[in-house]
Amino acid sequence: MNQTINALVLLILPLITAFVLFNSCRYLFGAVIYNHGIARRAYALFGLVGTPIHELSHLIAALLFRHRITGIKLFSWRSSAYISHSYNSRSTYQTTGTFFIAIAPFVSSIVIIHALSLSQFNTSLDLAADPFTTSMQAIKVAPEIFQSFILESSFSEIAFVTMLSFYCVPSNTDFHNAVRSGILATPILVALVFVATTLFESMNEIVGTVMMIGIFSSVTAVVWWVGLFFITFIPTSNYGVKYNE
Image (cartoon, rainbow, N blue to C red):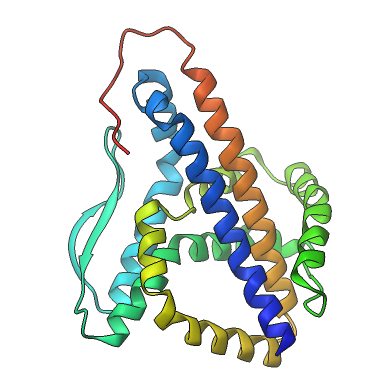
């Protein structure tokens, strides 16, 4: 059971860390970026790959949990993409599903990036150690793995993984939905992780992959938001549309 708890913490920690860093940078720089024509377009251009995958992940998960789809926008140059859906609040299945719908982009990105890139690297972590020690181990190993990935991958692969890792982070709305349904989802998560750590020897590698992608997503978020902020220093007469939090 100790490994189950450690694995659960290590699976959730990267998601929360990436969310906090991404949305902190968004809060600090978002208004300036969205009101600057060049920076806003750079942000949208960077999302050509990540944004549709993010929204499609929500869509697939919503359909799996039998939510009613009321609106779809996979990409837009001037406004936010979205998947609008409704559900029966009296249905435990549908209510619990809001948690998994919220984290679907992060999960799908992990699967895609692992299949395309990280499967060739050893990302195994020691689940018997305490989460803090294991996290420090992951942070120590991450630069070496990322360096190998950059050296051994094509430019298109690097660009794809970078864009996907930036846009896989749950939005504020996603996070709030996940928290609201978290109580119902927690027993299911614990059961799934318990079965996985008990039956699958590769669970330590799966957790390691989640940690690596969480670290990469966090770094990408900070670097790209700061980069977009510096773009706003370029003079332009096009101030774009007013940005709303």
